[in-house]
Length: 235
Image (cartoon, rainbow, N blue to C red):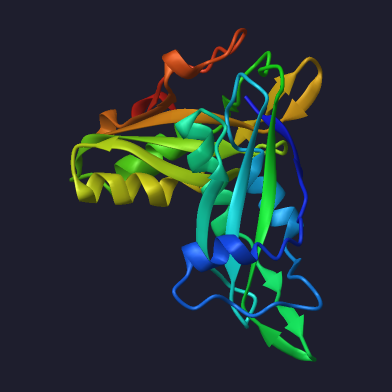
């Protein structure tokens, strides 16, 4: 499930609040910090999964180099998961630093992050090269035994982006699965007839020639038909 997104930088001095939040309040500024990686921030935000509309107000401290050094929730959404996502978004932000009397200074700004519910995909990402990856598992990790499960962000072109471990039977299994995840190819999720980005959970079972990789059935969307593929099932 994806979310549409909006965010806006509001240059507030917050003088009274700074006295409480910081031992040494940053100086005022003539020019507020300016967000410079808007597209990257938007991509992180749209990976959130939500079934409601919500707004989280972040209070962000930006240093003289434009780096984010502190992120706090000034006003939460009422949903701890969305609040955590908003903080995650804030930590990925980069700025042109605030300017005071022609020099860069520390500053605090408030950033509203708006989550908007969007309809779920009508079909989830479909794994297209499971047999090829299963044969690679058998060939390159023939002595490895165990299972790992990863949560993958698949973009609207079918490429794997962010990788999040779900569980693994061991460190070696988890790292092998991570390395193989980048080789997976998907038909992207669909919302109606339109390709869309979506999360998918994939399992890797390392068992020699019986190794296999597959999309977890519990995460598949309507109409998906990609089942397990083993190393021995290919030509």
